[in-house]
Image (tube, rainbow, N blue to C red; front, side):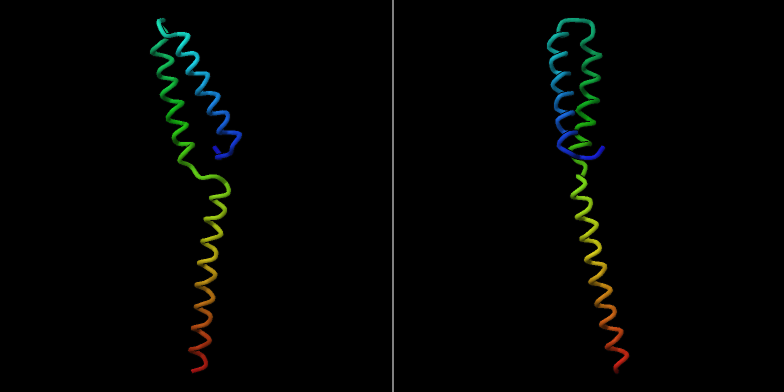
Length: 85
């Protein structure tokens, strides 16, 4: 899942709905079931929060390309320097 504001809002609404349902079903036989759902939703939310956004992924790729281009420029500089000698 891509980390975007829209998805963050959806997760927050989901967690809020689960909380409201837990309050509603506090003293019923469904308490264990809703707790299992709540735990799974919280685990998914933690995975989502720890993921990178599209902007971060693109910036990482650009940084990698900058390093690669710098290396190639340096390599070209060294090769031309060695050819002159």
